[in-house]
Length: 322
Image 1: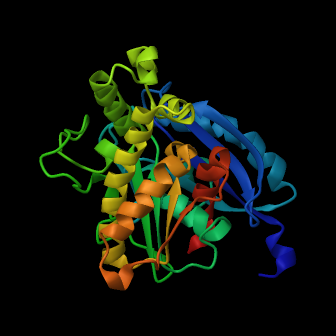
Image 2: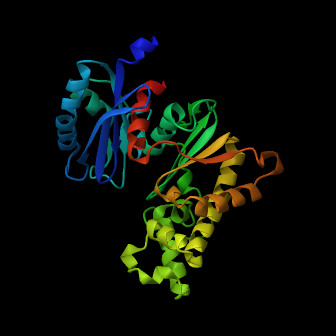
Image 3: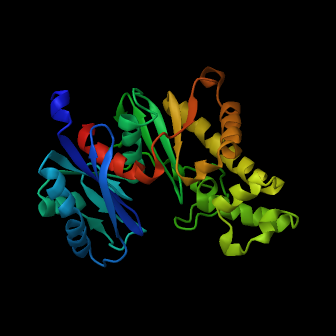
């Protein structure tokens, strides 16, 4: 396909979250030409949801399809299986069991559909459009409400034998530690390094230090953004929250580095807005826990993708990733 031909080809990227679904038409340069969204949680059955999604997306396909060719649809979703095209037992979606999602989308839209979990989609998007361009070995860590990950080795995303490889957020970083609010596991990375985990850490620490600025906020207002605001004001307890979070994240990243020896680890998501408050302790504790042969080799960088469009870009990239 020539460069002239490429300019006429687009894909539809769909990012399914527990509350909202975002979608957009994307070209080969990673430009979102048009986008929109619908509520995910407004539809009790997947059939109703897909009908509503089609109504919202059909005008975009018709509009851009007159001038360009639609190569397909890429979907990023929780608990999505790349091999089977299914969404399986997703705890934060309204539809339970195993949903043959890619098949339903293909039948409704008349376009090929590829699906994977949202963190894997983000990794592919980063490889095609972001900071991982040209890299064949890297790990993508998404730090949001939870901790997701995508592992790329030899230029290929690692899916494992069943399509679910790469759940690094649920690896244990502190045996017998903090109980996860959903899975019940004790001491996993997500319980400490996610925005949810940061809020838990902050609430515990502020209770021990009444002088912290964090105590000026009501309980329900304590989140990673609040902690960042207080850290910027010089609150030592808020800084310690990020230092502790960075320590747990850095220790986990050291394990991940020694597992796959990536060129870089890319951090993405709302938590990274804390900047050096979290990056410096993360880098320190990652390097401290690495074997000498791995030290000072792995770049630790923030994503280059715009957070508002990253999920759409990542999903659309699935169409061209093969």
